[in-house]
Length: 66
Image (cartoon, rainbow, N blue to C red; front, side):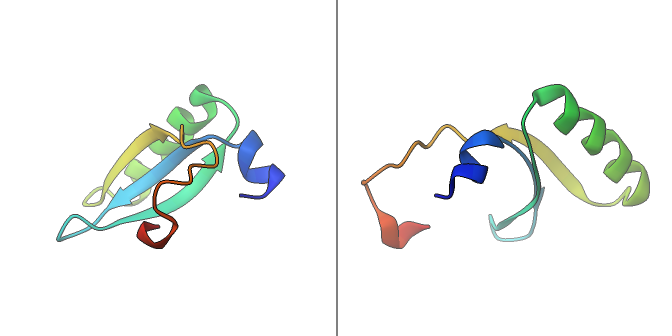
């Protein structure tokens, strides 16, 4: 994981069909991510979005799973 991704730990994720997800944006603070979530929900009202914290710090568990 690049150092830049270590700084931006709050993610806005779009939930798709069949348990799939796409990372839409990364933020340093939860309040920034929440603000972006409000804007994107207004722009795409039918989309399902979620703010999550990326707590996985260089996990060696399963690199093929990502």
